[in-house]
Image 1 (spheres, helix red, strand yellow):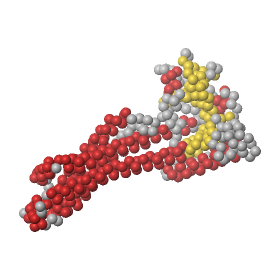
Image 2 (spheres, rainbow, N blue to C red):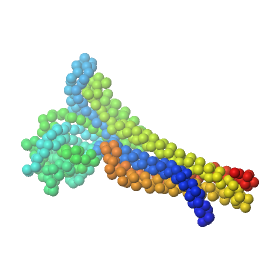
Image 3 (tube, rainbow, N blue to C red):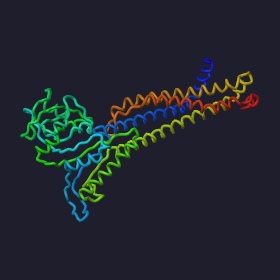
Length: 415
């Protein structure tokens, strides 16, 4: 039941012990403030890491070959290994049950692209129809490559949004003709956007079969990419992806007679495995941040308990008089608890709002590759403050019980 007298007593006690109360409240405030800031930066790290993986599918396996650096089975180092259509077909058939999307690519760097008077140098990639999903691309307008384009070796192209802005300005590129390397005409059939940004959108995709023909590549391909079918259990998906990566690596090393530890010759990268390591690191960072924040809060709670013990000691005679006049133990306990909860709640909410305001102010100013949009989780923060208030009540309960158990006769003798 609300009592104006009890609140007057609380404020009178705080007024008499300004410095002690301020220091106790400040320790609680600082604990919540630090926790909110740490949670904000933890969220920022998670956002940054996720954005790094957004440019491609997270469950991607990428396969490339290069030059051997070690002798093996009587073969000298320095051999250039070349992936071919047959390698792509064999691997795709062997791992068909585990594959979600698949593509082979043949790319050229710095290809010249012209449209009327506009021109620029861009990366030209021959690819299969699934390339769009492996790259996490979304169509702005038009369509991506399809199986008919590949079978008929059509001269069609899909351009990135940045290329559209560079070459076409405000003009609609769909069904317009562009000139590649000053001698081959292609018709634009689609514009895509990529979460990787302008660099990823400065590419042009044409059918793989067409690229091999116009660039005299025969059946050569530069790389192969797959995405693994995801299961509901993330760890199971990682295990499947790792097993598939290792098996592909062994297949290609056997096919090309390459040393098992020659990374330059055959390289199979698994983004799902990398994602697991990074997310595991994020969980560790978050746990450390919580440990630091909660440790600071506990220090504040201990401070609240200590100040309540001191207050009980200083008011022993007063409490004895109250009990001698008929005050119930529950009333004495409630008086001490009310003061402990009040100090904890006020300091906790001030720390919460100060932390949120600080993150809102500095969040937009802090952005790196692995730290983006640091922002406090208000729901989690409020939950933490409520838990803090409950902890403050528990911290005040021990001195409150001590006060309730004081015998009036002994209290009146206290000096």
